[in-house]
Length: 96
Image 1: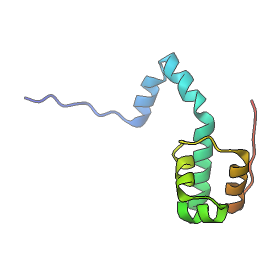
Image 2: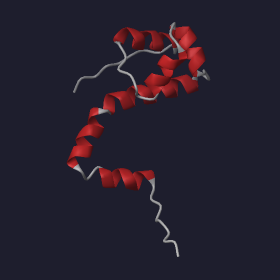
Image 3: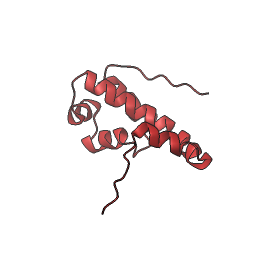
Image 4: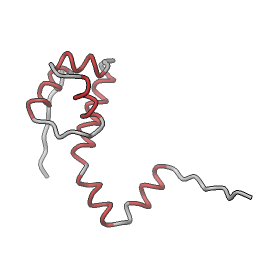
Protein backbone atom coordinates (compact mmCIF):
# COMPACT_ATOMS: atom_id res chain seq x y z
CA UNK A 1 0.00 0.00 0.00
CA UNK A 2 1.33 3.42 -0.94
CA UNK A 3 1.73 5.96 1.79
CA UNK A 4 0.15 9.31 1.11
CA UNK A 5 2.26 12.39 1.34
CA UNK A 6 0.97 15.28 3.33
CA UNK A 7 0.82 18.40 1.20
CA UNK A 8 1.92 21.64 2.77
CA UNK A 9 1.34 25.18 1.61
CA UNK A 10 4.03 27.49 0.32
CA UNK A 11 3.73 29.51 3.52
CA UNK A 12 4.28 26.46 5.69
CA UNK A 13 7.28 25.37 3.62
CA UNK A 14 8.80 28.85 3.76
CA UNK A 15 8.25 29.11 7.52
CA UNK A 16 9.95 25.74 8.01
CA UNK A 17 12.89 26.62 5.76
CA UNK A 18 13.35 30.02 7.41
CA UNK A 19 14.22 28.23 10.66
CA UNK A 20 17.56 27.35 9.07
CA UNK A 21 19.98 30.30 9.57
CA UNK A 22 21.88 29.50 6.37
CA UNK A 23 18.70 29.41 4.29
CA UNK A 24 17.44 32.60 5.92
CA UNK A 25 20.72 34.40 5.17
CA UNK A 26 20.68 33.37 1.49
CA UNK A 27 16.98 34.22 1.18
CA UNK A 28 17.59 37.73 2.52
CA UNK A 29 20.46 38.22 0.06
CA UNK A 30 17.94 37.82 -2.77
CA UNK A 31 15.54 40.46 -1.44
CA UNK A 32 16.66 43.22 -3.88
CA UNK A 33 16.08 40.89 -6.84
CA UNK A 34 12.67 39.89 -5.42
CA UNK A 35 11.68 43.54 -5.11
CA UNK A 36 12.83 44.46 -8.61
CA UNK A 37 11.07 41.46 -10.19
CA UNK A 38 7.86 41.96 -8.19
CA UNK A 39 7.66 45.66 -9.03
CA UNK A 40 8.43 45.26 -12.74
CA UNK A 41 5.88 42.46 -13.10
CA UNK A 42 3.24 44.43 -11.19
CA UNK A 43 3.76 47.63 -13.19
CA UNK A 44 3.84 45.74 -16.50
CA UNK A 45 0.61 43.89 -15.73
CA UNK A 46 -1.06 47.08 -14.52
CA UNK A 47 -0.18 48.68 -17.89
CA UNK A 48 -1.49 45.54 -19.67
CA UNK A 49 1.85 45.08 -21.41
CA UNK A 50 3.50 41.85 -22.47
CA UNK A 51 7.20 41.28 -21.86
CA UNK A 52 7.73 41.87 -25.56
CA UNK A 53 5.83 45.19 -25.44
CA UNK A 54 7.93 46.35 -22.49
CA UNK A 55 11.16 45.24 -24.14
CA UNK A 56 10.41 47.13 -27.36
CA UNK A 57 9.47 50.28 -25.47
CA UNK A 58 12.64 50.03 -23.32
CA UNK A 59 14.89 49.32 -26.29
CA UNK A 60 15.92 45.84 -25.21
CA UNK A 61 14.98 42.22 -25.90
CA UNK A 62 12.14 40.19 -24.43
CA UNK A 63 14.69 37.74 -22.99
CA UNK A 64 16.20 40.58 -20.94
CA UNK A 65 12.80 41.39 -19.43
CA UNK A 66 12.21 37.69 -18.77
CA UNK A 67 15.55 37.41 -16.95
CA UNK A 68 14.73 40.48 -14.84
CA UNK A 69 11.33 39.11 -13.90
CA UNK A 70 12.78 35.66 -13.25
CA UNK A 71 15.52 37.12 -11.01
CA UNK A 72 18.21 35.74 -13.31
CA UNK A 73 19.99 39.04 -13.89
CA UNK A 74 21.69 41.84 -12.02
CA UNK A 75 20.47 44.85 -14.01
CA UNK A 76 22.39 48.07 -14.45
CA UNK A 77 20.86 51.34 -13.30
CA UNK A 78 20.65 52.45 -16.93
CA UNK A 79 18.57 49.37 -17.83
CA UNK A 80 16.32 49.91 -14.81
CA UNK A 81 15.92 53.56 -15.86
CA UNK A 82 14.87 52.52 -19.37
CA UNK A 83 12.43 49.97 -17.94
CA UNK A 84 10.99 52.61 -15.57
CA UNK A 85 10.57 55.11 -18.41
CA UNK A 86 8.89 52.45 -20.56
CA UNK A 87 6.49 51.77 -17.67
CA UNK A 88 5.98 55.51 -17.11
CA UNK A 89 7.16 55.22 -13.52
CA UNK A 90 10.12 56.21 -11.35
CA UNK A 91 12.90 54.34 -9.60
CA UNK A 92 13.24 54.77 -5.83
CA UNK A 93 16.30 53.30 -4.17
CA UNK A 94 16.54 52.93 -0.43
CA UNK A 95 19.73 51.86 1.31
CA UNK A 96 19.16 50.51 4.81
